[in-house]
Amino acid sequence: MSCVGIVVEFNPFHNGHLYLIDKAREVTGADFVVVVMSGNYVQRGGPAFIDKYSRARACLENGVDLVIELPVYYATASAEYFASGAISLLDNLGIVDYIAFGSECGNQEDLHDISAILSGEPEEFKRTLKECLSRGMTFPSARVQALLHCAATEKKASFAEILSSPNNILSIEYLKALSKRNSKITPVSIPRIGAGYHDEALSSCYSSATSIRRHILSGSDTHILKDCMPPVSYNILSESMKRTGPIVENDFSSILGEKILLTSAAWLSDYFDVSDEIARRMENNRYSFINYNQFTSLLKTRDITEAHVRRALLHILLGIRRNKVEACIQEDYVSYIRILGFKKASSSLLTLLKEKTKLPIITKTADAFEYLGPNGRIMFEDGLNADHLYRLIAMDRSETLLPNEFTNGLVIL
Image (cartoon, rainbow, N blue to C red; front, side):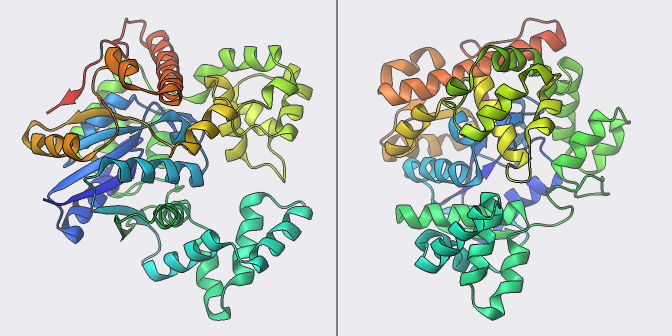
């Protein structure tokens, strides 16, 4: 019995995601597909468009056997921490033979070569990185330049193209994390088809999640989305839009604005991803805060990327502090497995998981703290608080009482 793992956001689930699942099963010959999915907040530094239980149901309706939540500490982090947390979770399951990931690069050898340089960090790489940072380059840009400086001449052009894509960057980080752990999980790169990650225009069949979200937010007719989403995913999305509408950053503006207004730079810099420079800019611009998105644009600079600012603001909003995340990383990133849903027909996979993993498996929120150590309890509690906040916003949008994390059961098909 073999199993392939996929790390996803599915925000929302579209035809390209279905292609990835089907192709991963086909290429690996796996009997089961396990998904590690971001919860109610995602890596771009904001809330998920629709809630995690709706997205878990879309997974299971479209060929996934088991859905496990990626803790909020890593789901909202930079590519390196996002990938490291996800790989640690997959590795600790004890049942995963492969990890499949979508990338624009069809050359897995190049991805491995890049990950080897970034993992090994030769002296030439470190020196060039330091020089680029001293010239005021952002860390992502400086790292690219340092990598290209170390690459063979005939590889520079292809490496530069690979590093221009978010999916390729995540693929490299998965490979780095597997290598650092000396994991036995076999990586499989699935070439992405259709629209690019950031493409904003809908296409006839394979549209990006970005373009789907933008289309909905524009107020345009959503029936056109039937062409780029599996029918059941379209229905789940439609139900969610009727119930709460899309959950977006600006829904959290008042809560975030209050925190920025009442917190000094010294305290702001305690939060994960908040550098001293970002904290000072927040303090200096606090009286110019209008809303979440406007403040993000106000804070970004040539040296501080918008993605970095978004993650910093989100961690302040959710109360995620640097020392908490670092303590969990030192304990191998994850200390529990939180199941969001599974297929009844795949119950043998759950039986195998219980036999193989050394981590506690959480299926009922009320029982979780009984099984967790100190850092696990802190991580789980921060995740719960983040979910409660998401629910609060969703209820404000729907004007309806919604299930909470103690009453919302697993998604079982």
